[in-house]
Structures are given as C-alpha cells and as structure tokens.
Length: 207
Length: 153
Image (tube, rainbow over all chains, first blue to last red; front, side):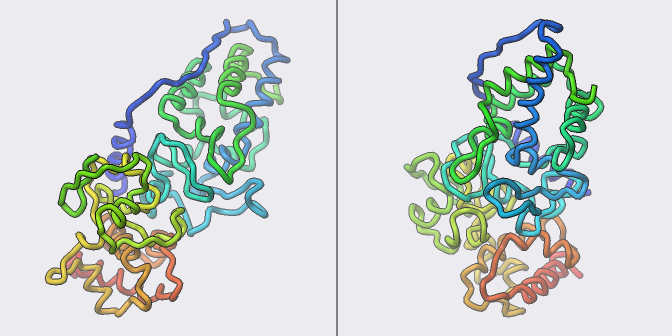
C-alpha cells in the first residue's frame, strides 16, 4: 500500500530531527528501594498526567479518531475537521497529522493554533489506549511489555528522557502553549514519579 | 536562511519562527497562497513541503529550510495547468475563490497518494479546507475528474 511507504518516509524525516539535551535530573533508585505505598502514590500522580486531555486525547482506540476534550471544550468530542488518523495512526491514509501539526521544537506561542512538537504528530499505538479507560486498566497496560512497546521499567524512564531531548509529546504536555491547560505538575516531577513507580515494582491499584 | 520555493532559491533574513506563510507573502511577494485564520483551522494557506500538503501558517521558516516548497504558482502554469487546476476550470469550482489555492494544493496532494479516492476519502482529506461559499460539491466532482485524468482513464 502506498501509505506504508509514506509512513516510512515521514518517520525517517522525523528521525532526522536533531536531538538535544533532555535537561532533566535523573535521580535513579535501586529496585525495591521504594515501598508499595510510595509506588502507588507515585502511580496516582502518573495517572493524573496520562489521563489528562493533553495526553489521553491522542491515546484513543481502534477507531483512530483523536479527541478534543478538556476544560477548553464544552464537552468531549472527536477532533474537528472529520479527522481520522487511520491504521497508520499518523493520518497517512487520509490527512496526515503533519498537515496542520508541524514538527518543530520551537515553543508553542499562538493561542488556538494546531500545537506542534519536536516529533511528527501522531496517535499513540492503538494498544496504548488511555482515553476513557479506568486507572487500573491504564496501569496494567503501561507495565505490560506486550502492550507498551516492549519496555521494561528502565526503558520507561529512557522513553521520557528521549522525549525531552526531542521536545516531543510528553514534554509538550507540560508546556502546551497559551489557551491549553497543561498536564499537572512538571516533566521533572513526572520523571521522578516514574522512577519511583519503577523502583517499587510498578504496582497498580488492582494488585 | 535559504528557502527553495517553486524551484527558485531565496536567501532571506527572518526570525527562525516566522511562519512560512508570512515569508511567502511578505518577504518574497508570492501571494497566491492566502492568509485565512493563521491557526490551521481553515486550510487557505496550504502549500507543499517536500510533497506533503501543509498549512504554511504553522511551519516555522526554520523548519522549511532545506525542503522543497511548492505554492499554487509552482503547481502548474497558465500554459500547462496541473490536472487539478484544469479540472477546477472545467467544473467552474471557484465562487469568490479565496480558499481555492489551498483547496487545489490539498487536492493535488490527495491525488498524489490516492489517485482514485472514494467520496469518503475525499471528504476525510478535504474537510480541513473550508469554503465559505460552499463549493464543496464542485470540489468533490473536480477532484474525481482530475483523478481520472491523472490515471489516464
């Protein structure tokens, strides 16, 4: 299919983006050095972030439709303009996300404009669905390498650091620009909580 | 900063975050690309960046450096219209015309990757390009005519 070639071309283009410094303090912890209770508390704060509209709006199910939800909207609804990101999750079959969402590490400064980030805009892989999911379901998904991109705990931490180097989506969520509510806390706090959660063995509320 | 627009190289001195639309219109005087909303809500400023339709109001000049930019002026010429431009004339698509350069650039991009789109595919791709005159039925018909011409059908 022609769109598969198109996806590959866009990913290569995105990968060519110059990596920078992540600018974060990495306070690594030994496995088992954090209690279950502290780990669950850290997870609760992680959940506050990942269930926030800045994150969950693009972690949607196999209908491949990004959402518009959050305090900026009267009620949650599908992304305007009849958008469907397709199985490619980057819109290659229809209208690529990058048509409106530029790839740029520059700050978002224009209210109501299509936000941009330092990686090609896309929906998260379909197995990473968060929108409308329970806290425990999201937690189970995030710690399951079969459904989290093959990541163990250390790779989860590296994922955040790599995102910060690119000024990609996680980083954007905490600094989305005027007119959009940021995810709660800071990227540094989110990294610290992830390290705590991993050191506690990635506990979930349903354990 | 050096930009390549319609196969011509331009050396410009602008802030890295100046939107490409501003560069095209105000710095280079290439005004076929229109300003509609400035926030990627209307599609009037659509150009091709390395073959991909993009809203030029959202592309920082810095991000366009090194890429091939094509505007409506570079898609075809009056003597040799692009198939989409020819179909637009045949179907008399334009009413006021303000959005049409963006519509044509988006349609050309659509047909480049999908030369035989269904109605649903046309609607999915073209819904980000607004037309206050409501020329949508003629846009859809012209896209199909252009697709047939490009396929040699």
